[in-house]
Length: 384
Image (tube, rainbow, N blue to C red; front, side, top):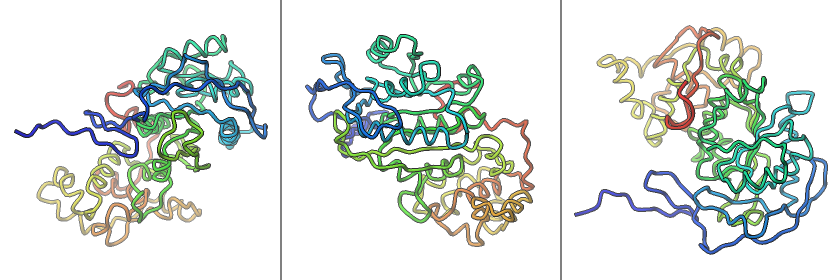
């Protein structure tokens, strides 16, 4: 009798767990991090020595997806890019910086030196890291918490302003962290994020239409934010060394006002249903991939949907006249039903959601919440 339990699939150094999540598998189970020299940097330094890792205290944990930064020059580049991201839309230095997964402090130490412990706080699930950072920086707030469960809107409310995010993210939960930040942007809780991730994930976020990398991440983050792929990061700057390249990505979230203008009344939860259904069967036409959803919504009248040619709401048309580049790509083509999902722009997915769920007039009601939990998993974060 064949077992119903799925095999553990390996892919480029990753292993898929029974619950479907991917985690990094170390090549050497006896690996111990090397003893290296301490240094601190600021965003203006030209170079830096290797960050510190206390001898015998920090063997990277596979279960936490830990790959620590060990190259000072890379840390310097990350800090410079972060400072640029954090000050791009404001004239003053950031006031509330949140580092996700600081680990042994490769980024934390220069962040403390540059901005101070009154500006920076960290979120870390590894108690070893919490203890180390509290010893090195006694006045630094280090929250012992799972990054997937963080309530970003509550944090921003407590701080009285949007959060500036920075971090070297674990590969296997990168997308879930990003989706949590997207949800947080519904309330304006997150202003920007400068984070490392797997190179392939970064490519998906900035991918244009009509290519294999274009998918859900592309649609969501090109709709929600201005995305900048800063640079590629080689495996050699981490320990243990992953078998894939990484990237530093900067995101500047639009915030609720501008996002509402792009959505023009479309509920993000409805958009998620459309985008998810479409890319679950990305090789099929939009008509076929959304057939089940359309039947659920319209029953026997479903066939009328595929021939409809909706006009853009008045506010989107006005945005097109003003030269808005996003709005200019928002109108659905006449043959939209015969297109494949990868051929539709993020804006056209918004209009597709409007076609199926409404509202046709594109009315914007700021009093209607965009949703606290739309893109992140139901088991992550607060429900209200």
